[in-house]
Length: 168
Image (cartoon, rainbow, N blue to C red; front, side, top):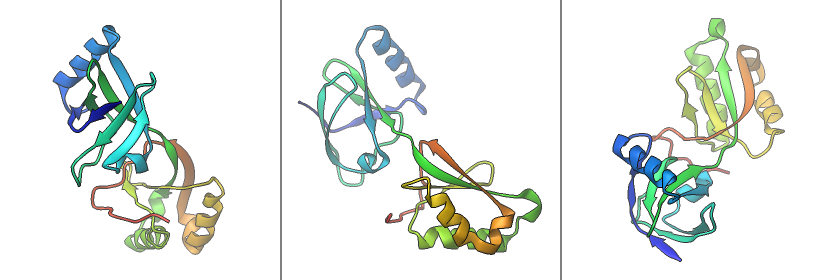
């Protein structure tokens, strides 16, 4: 089993690392490690890469993996791939947006102890466990529902940094 204690960097923020990844793909020395969002928050984890290499992760307290992080294997580079998960995206109908409406949305999601992601299009996303939850949130939003558009998406969910929420 390979033990990894250090993250080399992230392919999405380090151009030189992206080049090394391309080279390792060409040389057949590239592997992927698929992790859930919950697994990415662990500092000790045992898992297999896509090619069957058993790997043990052991990081310092406070370390958190991110989609695109690169780990140094003995003979190859290993890229972390976060697995997509189901989320609900809440969009505000543009002609009905108000700060009161935003507070209601935040309150309802917060009462369900869900982390959120504030998206570039001014929508809010949060993870769900089952498709039927959209009906629950439509009921919870009650009167505000006529001003909102709710959709289920399967995506790589990354909560905003300040969202230190314990999920239920």
